[in-house]
Image (cartoon, rainbow, N blue to C red; front, side, top):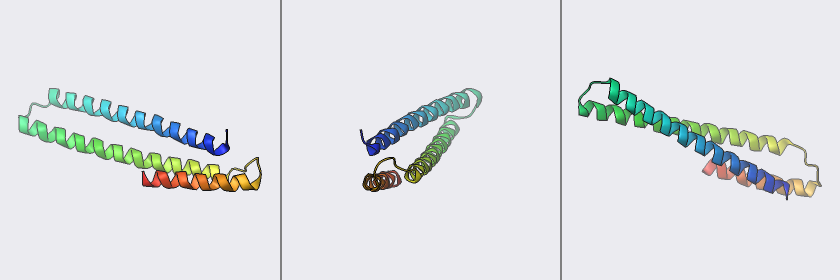
Length: 110
């Protein structure tokens, strides 16, 4: 297995794990917040709906922030991999470097 394949697998697994954690945490947090809000806030239906909309918007902003932080961490990880010395010949290192650059561009676009 090539070094570049290992990098791709590692990054893909990290993305999956991070996405699962973000989705799970956001869902649980939003559900708990809504339940507590409805149970303990004796408000009219209109006010409750407004509060739910506000909480949902805040949760979406938190998800966006977490995604941006994750992209930054992945970029830092890729940069750290670029700096590591390759144990093989220079030609393969240059090839891997191009693949790492392509992966980093995918992270920035996605």
